[in-house]
Length: 248
Image (tube, rainbow, N blue to C red; front, side, top):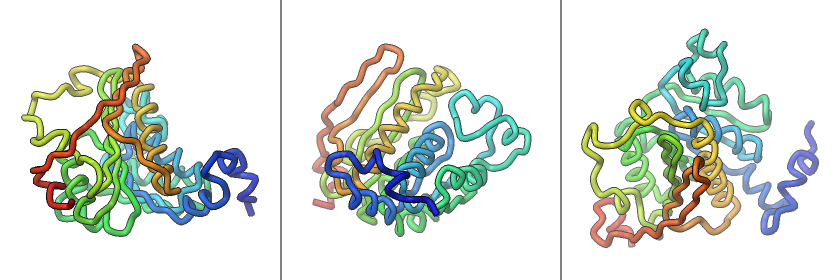
């Protein structure tokens, strides 16, 4: 049996954390939507931190072009064609056998998002499209669940913590989904493997902070790992937001 005080000793030394914070993590549950570059980072950091239950949802299988940034997978996973969620369910307990990994191979849709969100404490965005992010946003508002938005392109990324009823939501930041073909993508702009590591770590930090009762980060955090820039951008809550404007 692993000694908790030994495993998490350095983490429990943190101010406002301690043994009580560790217990809160052990009793916490997080939904990670997507298990690519961001999800690879988030899932490993949260399991190693001691979060008790992770639900990981992804429909895809790893490809060779993923490996420079999706650090949960290797060439054997690509060759086997094993779904990403199943790989996560197999590998993550090796880092922390006390974690419960609920790995689901499925596409997140309007018909299943509420069931996925309803019984977790918070949600992390590890997707690559706004359609799914709007589903997450609206479901989290319906169920009063915090969630953390994150996105990466080229060498830059962004993240925002959303607390229903208190903070601006994704629709306050982006009132309408971008028209198809108008947003830059990895297919056109590429992505540096270190960028999702930073953004995924920022999102995982927010999850840990929320689970132990810490104060969430405000506004939109933007980064560029190539230039080394970090910037906090204020976001104003939209009084007429169709998603969160009714939750005051």
